[in-house]
Image (tube, rainbow, N blue to C red; front, side):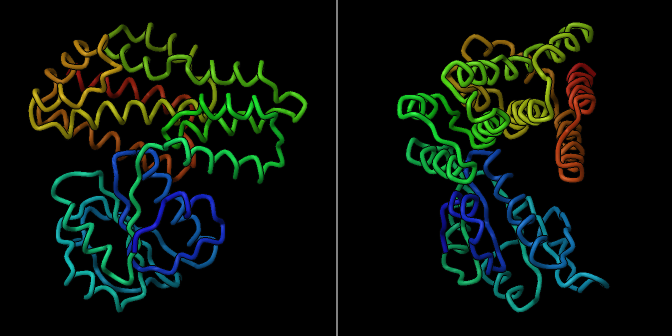
Amino acid sequence: MKTDPLNLLLDKNFSLNKKFYFISGNEISLIEKVATTIIQRYKVKENIAISKIDSIASYIEGAGLFEDKKVFLIQNIKGVSEEKLNELSNNNNVFIFTQENSQKIKKLKNVFLQNEHSFLLDCYELDKNSKIRVLNEFLSVSNINLEKDLYWFLLEKLDNKYVFLENTLAKILELNQNDINLNNIKKILTIEDSGREKLFFYLLKRNKEIIEAFREKVVTKSDVNEFYYYCKFFCQLIIDSKNEDEYKRKIPLYLFREKGFLIEIYRKLNSRKKKLLLELLSTTEKLMRKEGDLSLAIGLRFFISIKKVVIS
């Protein structure tokens, strides 16, 4: 069965009654948000244990000593088939698969779509209607009233990526109702566009310059998380590209001024360094899941570690 990821995120009573959740698409932050939300909802209603495995081939059946069921987070679709899902459908565990779009998953999506025990959730950048849904829900839950002109101004300026849109709304929530006006909204949006994405292009500068720029542009934990997702986007772009030509095609058009720098970074990375980057991303994400947020110190250390991998 296919469902809109926003149905799950915005409806607190959304029924999590499936055994398999296949979360795909090209919007990484939304994929991760959906997976995290599913896990959090299960934690609230049941006694569960969370287990992260590379592929379904690593799955070993068996209940734990104290939990009612296990929720498996799986980031590799290798070994998944209609037969395998049917085989697993009779046990008590839950399986969450996350996978960015690629040619190899087209047929697999149909397998999950046809399986009665599955939810298929496709995650893409938010369009205008989707942003209206998110904004309206936020205003309703927060009991915030916006003037018509301010509402449409904010809607137009909100980011199409879910996690960045959510960060903006969280900062608005920190304001008192009387302070939610056009001037303050513009200030928040200016902060949101203050160049955290551009920090990645400090990668080859001296550590002193990196630290100064980081401290200037990254102030809160939500800033650190946002910066992490920017870094992950650029790293994944390199890791997932089979060759330089493919990589060049994947570089977003709006980064035309930085294209030369990005190509320079790509040429510095071999298969060994790509593996080290993957390990660094995985370790950092484990910290995020454990702590909920990254501290400023961890965020800076993460970025310096990327530099060490690149120039090693």
